[in-house]
Image (cartoon, rainbow, N blue to C red; front, top):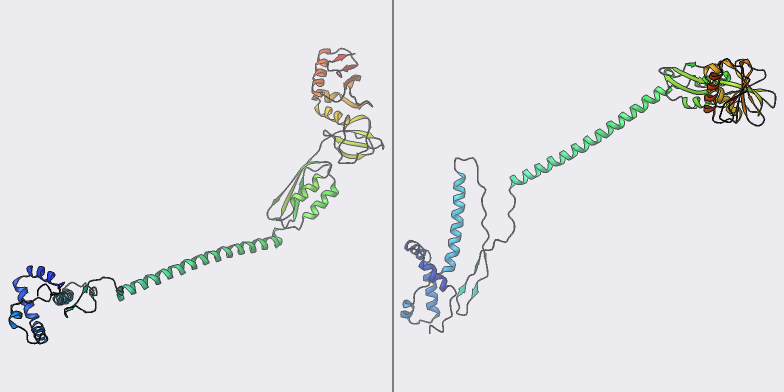
Length: 385
């Protein structure tokens, strides 16, 4: 008969568990489950139809392990909650928050083939997450508000800096505009230095155009270009001096000589061969260059051999410059020089003037007081006749 009885899956658990239970715990468990066991035994007896009572009495009573485990867990949970509440009554001001036990899931009651019921207990921690406490929620909301306030303040500071920069720029522009349109900073006084031969008409027009202009925006560079176009002007510079003065400094070209052109008028030239002026008579302050030259206007530049003659006059040593009477240019383009005491120097083609001048000076020193009429350095080697 024992072989035909279905195997109870809790029998092994009950046997192992009973071996480890003390007498006191066994007595308490017997008292707890006495009523249920008695009811279960009566039901079994009635169902068996008045079977042999001796066999039932002889059979050892099985301890209900499943129900006992459920009750023990419930009791432990209640004890934990009680200990937690008791700890909150201590003198310490810190109160521990209640700890929620993991829900114990029980599967539906299953009926065995023998007619007995089996309860399966599952200790699964999975489940809905515990809700945050009100204090934690309030702290998170406070941090969020503080962060949002900080972001708004930073954006406000950026806008304030931008508005400040724009305001300063607008103020500077307004101040500049006021200064430009103010008559206080307009040109009222124009001074000119270094002017001797420059065309007074052009100079007067430039001065008239500058007066009344704002000193900070007056076109001084344009005025310089207009003055440099005057044939006599070599260099010019304009400088402004607050609040209302402009200074014009002119460096004029130095005239070297003059030549008579085909039209019968004389052209005054400088060391660079630039025609400075066109005049009718022969000026006494400049070296005459004999020969007929081209018709040029003031501001134009003459070419060789007249340019070579002007460069030679500019390169003469002071003692020869003092003895210079005139320069001459032949139809073949050769240059000669007439000195006092009826001495003539032949330079030939207008090239290598430096070497030829050194030969002339050395030959004059060599001859001393000897009488000679011509010094020829056209070939590079000086000769005296």
